[in-house]
Image 1 (tube, rainbow, N blue to C red):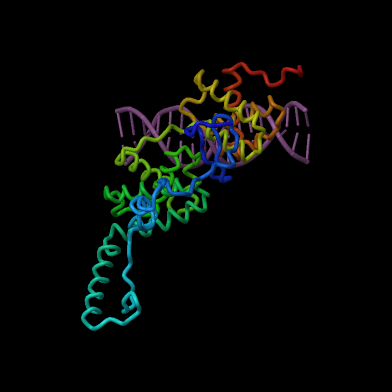
Image 2: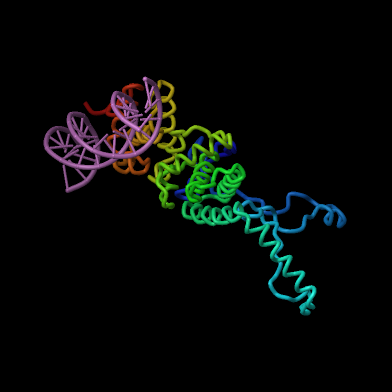
Length: 299
DNA sequence: AAGACGAAAGTGGTTGA
DNA sequence: TCAACAACTTTCGTCTT
């Protein structure tokens, strides 16, 4: 029932939070929208309260901007005299220079639009989107983007953010929504890893099992069985250096047959992103390693 | 008729000289 | 930069249910 927080992953296909321990879907994760502080007296309320919107990494200037209006009126609506109007003109110009005319900021501005667009297409949770924006921001600070494609780094940032938070996502899924090819995105991704020194949890077949289990509408029991099989297989060395998705596919297939929760190889292959042939070779391999017999009743 | 099987050739990525 | 290599894919004919 209760899941340790580090075992919870987000399934981008369905927009649900899932526990990787049991495979169950956590439908009501309550998000507390209130203030994190409490005021016991009116004075405290004033001192603790902060003015303005919270910092938002998705805004190119973190959301702290106060924009100077183009209207030549003061706050009450009276028009300004000649001197003041000139002064405002200078201020506006200065603000534009500092905010948008810096190439970094313009770059970031475009990038964040892209991050927004792709994230919503992938159904990413807001935390992942923010993470991607932060990663991109760091990439700009390190000058990684100069002379390279923005989209490439946007895709790489999103992918990295997802990997960092253990969202089961593939590079293909991200690449689908940008014009750059996988190779270029992968290169940018590796660059990000190296330069930003971000450590990423290894791709775990368990995450793929959970994700595929949801796509296939498997019974919780079957998903648990598949995870168990995959873990055992890993312990005896099956699937080392192989695509974790393929191990997931094999484990799921075996679990399905054992639990009488039948799915075709084709369906499982599609859900895990491998082909039937790969699924077959992996599941044979697992059966050999674990000495599982799929048809104990017959023959 | 659908699904499972596996051989053979092809593809894209990694490694090591 | 290139060739060798492993993992995986595509394709397709055959077998099983």
